[in-house]
Image (cartoon, rainbow, N blue to C red):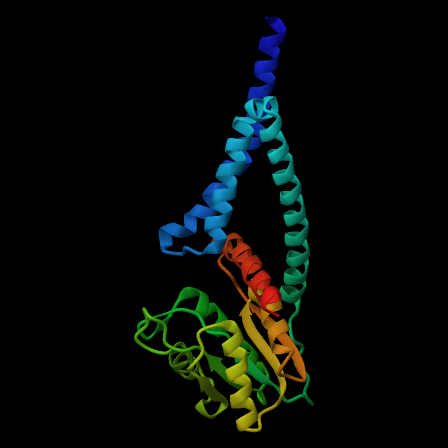
Length: 260
């Protein structure tokens, strides 16, 4: 009986050690949903946290059942492979996010700003941060031109590119330096259609892509098909949203890998 009480206390402590971190992770991923940010990233992560908590809570019962324990071991092995894969993606995402395109006096470049949701004729907070990074770069690199990208989504009253162009003009970027790509609805289309505009207007094929840091590795990988040199500048991202969009990016990268 004494040993059983010690075991119970020990298990309660270990349960807290496991459940508290998963509980915090669950809150971190669910919190953006209160601001209408719902995507594969926070849904998958929230489900994972719940399943992990249940697996720990019922582990004694699972352990006593040979078939359940075998299935659990297979799932655990699969999760380990998944974590290794996610680590590989994350390292490359971090490396791309840390790059900051050096401005060279002799270089001529086209800046591509990747689109994001707009509210009426106002950029979303995420898009405003991308535009701020673009404005800062364009103010320093006076020779660079800019292609703003993004069509009109189902819940938008203006194209993303038109709102982005107006935002930059109002903040001192010359209208003659800004080209708009207003047909795209995905990152791949952003870059393909931006290339068409750059090619049609004989603009520089050395480009600087501006987006959130978590987004840049995928964007640069896609852009490498179209441009001579691809550099990047990371916009600031709301810390609360990084985990959600980071996990979402894992799914987007995997989809791109599978589709070639």
